[in-house]
Length: 310
Image (cartoon, rainbow, N blue to C red):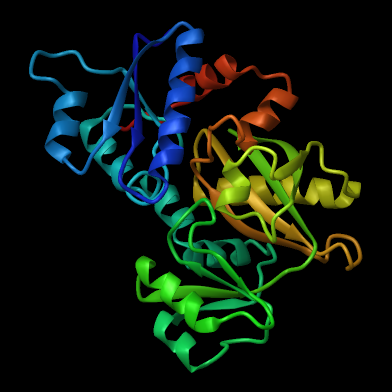
């Protein structure tokens, strides 16, 4: 049994509020599992974080439970600090976290495995002002954000200038991808085992930030009511992506499935989340619960499978 677990949460990314909800829920589950828990709201103060993790009086946490989301929390930055300090931490390491967070780079990895990705490319954000980079509908997304933040589906009649202005907060480059019609699927992976496939049916136009974190907006169907070959392929692809990136602990892979195409030919992998949400509405813990793993059991499993720096 771990003596002390430090739950890192908050941060300063656009996903700060989600991270706080995740962190508090995880801390509660860890306490239910018998762990001593300290919570820490991470600010942009590295010295304060280091002093918390390695206080001058000695002691400090035995394991860090990383409940940070977004940039600096799941892109390899905080992982690098923990590696240097040789403190065990949950979820994936520096390289896997950085690659998964960089959507264009992750696409290259998926494609190298033979996993289907949507047609797309990285463009300069300002080039949107010159007109559509591909036939509508298509998706515009920041290259390094999570929780569908900044994602826009550009359809006939939509104002492209408004999309370009909205993307300005996320940098000079954006990823544009052909929109894949059909159904939204997701698969959580625990270690070397994909748990299940969930179908998401949002009542909004797509599975955006609001649909992810507002109760009652999205219907979760687990196991997903899809053909067996599609179900198994989604699980296999999620595991293959997890293994190729060198992930650790819990992850979640997101897919679109065009059900107008035969067999698995309409399945497309969108991204892999090395630190999936852990809020009451989140998908990975929901799949774990469906598989008979309680909240406190899941938290303890994640701590027991923490990454241990050399």
